[in-house]
Length: 103
Image (cartoon, rainbow, N blue to C red):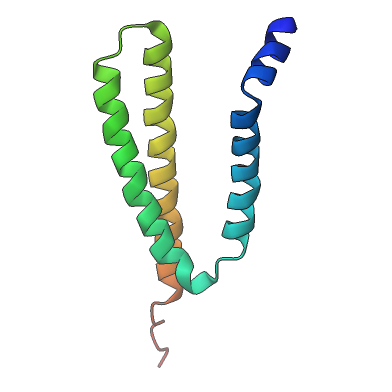
């Protein structure tokens, strides 16, 4: 327990920054209009693709078990983000397609 408290004390500024970033991200994302959602999702997919490529490169040079696990986790989560982003983008674009007329 002492090690955890010491870690929190030593890294308190970083932990505060991460918590603040989470709240700021939630606030920003919740106020994005639907019209901008698809272009922003496409941009996020592109960034996640870059993260996946970087994680694969780093994973190829990993030597410790921790590095391998973190690299695999980065590839897995980045892939989930890209696949989910494409699914949401496809669903959003379906809303804008014209429906066939019934004669």
